Length: 95
Image (cartoon, rainbow, N blue to C red; front, top):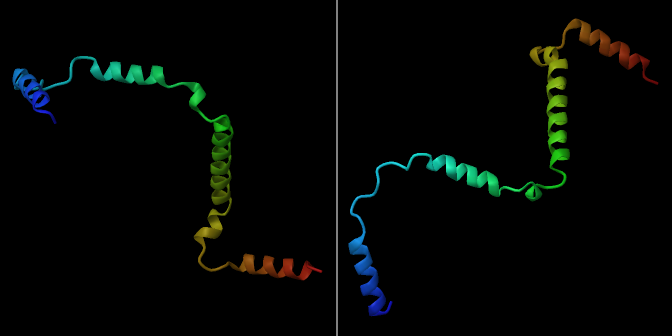
């Protein structure tokens, strides 16, 4: 830095208040949030955002339904007698 710039900067720093305010001004966070929301445009979102959200909901629904339908088989450690007999019948019906 040049010497003149340094002296000017040091002079301005000497004039600054020694203590910073302890708290944010009243309503500062509300103003910042409102400004951020005002700047957020709908044009910035992807055109297929709604499609992706719908796909996420459908996949979550399919996952929950598949776990609910197979809950009993997930709880059993060994196949029951009925399951073994059902499997034998299904295997005998295959061509």
